[in-house]
Length: 53
Image (cartoon, rainbow, N blue to C red; front, top):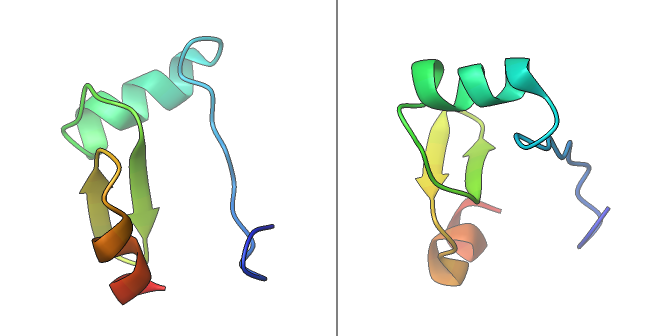
């Protein structure tokens, strides 16, 4: 838990279902892909993270 925010980390290298979800549901082939509410952030964007959190 960072900044007091709970999160779930999924490892797409060892979890085939997580990889399928990443590609099929979120249309991403890149990590990190972050889901915050209904927003999907592909790649690391600290400014956007601060706005959403």
